[in-house]
Image (cartoon, rainbow, N blue to C red):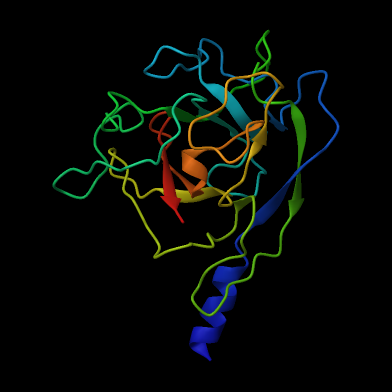
Length: 237
């Protein structure tokens, strides 16, 4: 009985399914695929190590009850020219290395993505993301239940419990805080791009881009907010 009660308690973690609309956006929206990034004052649009500006794949405001990130604004950027899997580099005491969001990703000198939690993002940038088609996102409450292995429902979602394609992975931030699950992107989830753009390496279709080779992605973020980029993308398939 106790185990059943504990399982039910874990299953009620607040979560929201993320739906992508079909009607293109013509003006800034805080919840979007592509579109106009909402960045804190003084925050620059991030660049890849290759010098190319990273593509905004999606962004949204995190609902207040998704703790400890409620009210933050999540932005996920990824290079269109570099499509690979993320590999964590750890310290001897089991933490992610210092400034892991900028640490080398062999064979690359730095990551080909940037995930950001902005706390004061009130205004959109002047320029729109040029590659990924701007589409609206809608967040709707999700009754995220656990299966017998303790995995949550699959799908594109924020909060709730990861569905874990493989064994669960947990990481500790360089600051010492245990990272907390924030968002999940399903395996093979593609993002529409404008016609005529260069094809992304290792993608499925010429008119779409993938993140992290199309792996299932679990974003884990630092609950201490030690840095706006203190988010680790766990890849599984």
